[in-house]
Amino acid sequence: MLHALTPERAALHGRFSQHLPPALTIASGDTVRCETLDVGWGLEPRRPDGSRRTVEPRASPRDDGPCLLGPVAVEGAEPGDCLAVHVEAVVPGAYGWTWAGDVGFSNGALNRALGVDEGDPFLLRWTLDAEAGVGTSHLGHRVPLRPFLGCLGTCPGPHHADADGWIDAWVPRRTGGNLDCRALTAGSTLYLPVEVHGALLSLGDGHAAQGDGEAGGTAIECPMARVDLRIERRKAGPFGLLAAPLAKTPEGWVTFGFGASLDAAVEAALLDFLDLLKAQRGLTRKPALTLASVAADVRVTQLVNGVVGAHVVLPHDALLFPDA
Image (tube, rainbow, N blue to C red; front, side, top):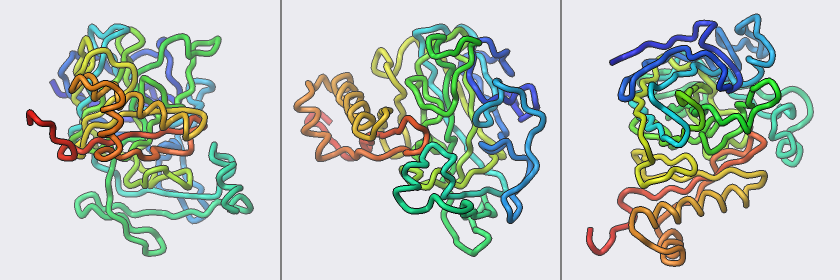
C-alpha cells in the first residue's frame, strides 16, 4: 500500500520520543511517499541576509532540533526487531542553502581552528534542478546533485530520554538518526534496530549534495519534493542480530561508527565491518582486517553533530572470494 506523508504541523517535530503520537501507521512492506521541509524548518528560500519564513510557532521541547517528519509506526514492530528501510526515490525541492563559519554549530572548535569563526557566516543560496541533476549557487557555482536524507532513524529507547521523555535528534546513534551519510542515496536499504513499540521512524534534514565529512557544518540543505520509503519489519538484520545501523547501497555494504572523537568513530565502524565479514563469510578478525585493508574504504561521515561519525564501505565488486 502507498501512503502519503506531508509536512503538516502535527507531523513535524525536532526530538524523538516513544510518547509522540504517530503521524502515520503502516503495515510491514508498505511504501510511504514523503515531502519534507529543510533542517531549519524553512518555508521559503533564504534571502541574501539569510532570513526567511519558518514554521511558527514551535513548541519547546518537542520542536527543539532538526525539522523531522513523522513518526511512522510499523504494525507489529517491537524492541529487538529490525526495520529495513528501502530508499526508492529521493527528489530535492527547488532551492537550498549552505553556510560556513557559524560557531554556534557543534563544529565551532573546527571553525576556530580553520580561522573562520569571526564575523557572519558565509552563505550560498542554491537553485536546484532535480531533472538535470545540477545545483547552481547565486554566485554561479555548479555542482552535481546527489540527494539523500541526512536524518533517518527509529526512536531510541527510553534509556536515552530526559525526565520528560524527549531525546536529542541531532546525535547519531545505533538506531540511526542524524547520520549525514552521503552514501544513502536512492537504491539504498538502511537496516535499523528497533528499540520502542512500533519502531517510530522519523526522517528529515534533506541534502541535495554533500561531501564526506560535511566539513563546513552544512550540506546543500533543502526541502525534499519527494521521498519514497518502502519499510519492512524483520526479526533480525540481514546477517542476524543488528547492533548498529547497516546499509546496502548502490556502491556497496556500509557499516557505521559514532564517537566523541574520530578515532572512536573509526574504531566502532571497523568493528562492525569485521563482524559483517564474520557473518557473511565466517572470517575471524585478523583475516577480515587484512582484506579490509586492501578492499574497503574508511570514510569520515560527518564532523558536525557533537558525536562524530565514520563509515566503512565495501564496494560490491571489490572483493571476490574463492567460491564466487
